[in-house]
Length: 277
Ligand code: NCC
Image (cartoon, rainbow, N blue to C red):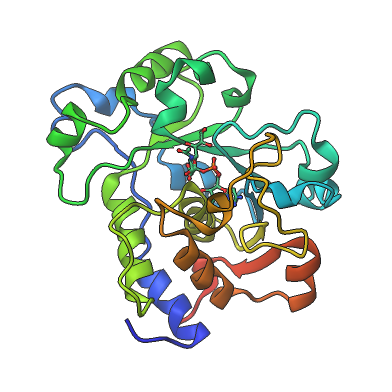
């Protein structure tokens, strides 16, 4: 697609971004009784006007030695990803977690202890699985990339009071369309990263969103995660996910200063509800 101005970009985002979760009204979930399994309040109902300022904290190694913890925690809500911890890293990443986005590997692989780890308790959980672009919900239910459905059912029964949603594949792919439509190159047909999904989600739910280390600061490093000694530049630049294009798009939406980008790896985004088109 053609390059657009920042205000056109925000309008396009506002027009196209509709959060959708699996709500039990569609097959095969309807016949399986999921209307009673999913939380009774939708994510939007749960969030309505509760959180004005929101922080999105990526798991990038560059967040180490940032001393951003207090600033991150000063937001009304904080979003983190997968199994990224706060314990032991409070000075750099803070300790407040309001929402966690987890991919289906986290939910399904025993090593992550999804149903009993404290990381996944006392927060709103959003899980997603990269169903193929053209698969319908029945095909997806029968053959997800990683089986997130059984652990979902199990946790809903175990802790029914915990808000836990599965993001609808159409929402995931609408974000892919959005990236492709605002990029001149042809991007790979793989789903966006959890980071981009989280940024778009918070832009839909909050008045203002601060994103940390999605666009790398001057601390940029090939250390993949702040909590692991594993080096791979692809974590920051992307291999499977269209991560580079996600980042270029987010950079174009930045309302904050160049100095904050360089020193904090911080991007400031407007919430979509306040965007006038
Ligand atoms: O690495 P991951 O992501 O958990 O990171 C969360 C989000 O932070 C942003 N990020 C991360 C590292 C980095 N150096 N730069 C970044 O910008 C990205 O936006 C990223 O989405 C995922 O998206 O779910 C992902 O999950 C991991 C892995 O499944 C989990 O960490 C669990 O172990 C994927 N890695 C592999 O599958 C090997 C990764 O590709 C994407």
